[in-house]
Image (cartoon, rainbow over all chains, first blue to last red):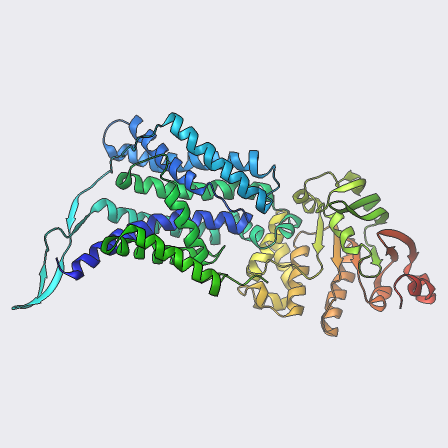
Length: 308
Length: 231
């Protein structure tokens, strides 16, 4: 294959990764933006989403699509409820103090990880995709007959991967609508801007926090359900999404949702392309290096606001 | 209407307010006067339930509201116009007003009435609050509080940094609300602005109430003003 088709393939892999990363990172970003909580356990909520997806799918009978759809609905809800409970039981008790919430969520990370190891086990388990047709991708070349569409051997993707990208876009649009068009979104944004004034105008900030923490974790779980037919569920799978989400949120600007999405596309795509042409390790090195430069030259992130 | 009884409050271990007691009746303007750091803003925050009281109580219409969670206090009918306006800066004018309306489930008529009061805001509904001029921001902060259809209105230095025409507008609104039977607690630095409209003046110093006098008395006798505010 030539370079061109290769690049197309790598971009598609990157786009799948960017799609899932965008969901996970937006969850982290909303939690940080509204609650000022650095949620170190975010990757574990991602992992729980995948594990619950396997669990739900293995209980369901009939066509794999039934199990998958059930997982897509139930896993994020379950994870969201667990996160909301963690907010009430742990984060509220430490009064959302910035340092103590970091330590508390580190504790949460280990609890979730080890409980999963003890119950789910150390194996990686697959979830069947609801559909998985192989799609050949066209390419073009200028040969003896001029412009030609060709179908290079080995250039292809699956319908499921395209579905992941489309689903992520749809979910992100829904999140945007929730934040900008609904009462809950208005309350979230008001709380983010001035917690005390939100209270002075009757907003139950504690309830907003419970919903936001659950919602953020649910988004991570949703990303995981989408990726688990491609990647398999494993109790240590939360590490990479956590690191990458932090990278994305820092590059995009803490608390800026549009910045987070743009950065997720940037990091996801470059990760896909660099992993294919060089190595996944180099991809991680480069994105971490990018974070270092952002922190030095533009600490508020690409789209963030300078702290007043 | 609103009564503070022996309120003690502060930030963490630091006690700011000591035995603060005063009351404001319906259709009355009570003004808190005192130097910087005397505890005026802290008093306002204590009324709003934003600071835990170590002692004392805040009673509204016979109900002790000082033990309520902070977000329940405004629902009892207290509109707060804080110092420095503290608008939801990245939200639009319409959204800021919406939050005020949602506090107590106010009707569309309230929204209309408030926009009637501040026509400038109607022209800027889609604009972000942070892009408004200082005077317009103060209008919005006032409008947001009036959206609650408040029984009690707390104003913390509403005329700070405003041009005279704007001060006049805010003052007219306050006087109008007094006529409507709202109890008003006003914190103000500009003594002359206060004496004309206030019914009673409460002097506060080092977190203690030093004196409560009729505004009429104050107009004739300047010794108290010299003592507590230094003008």
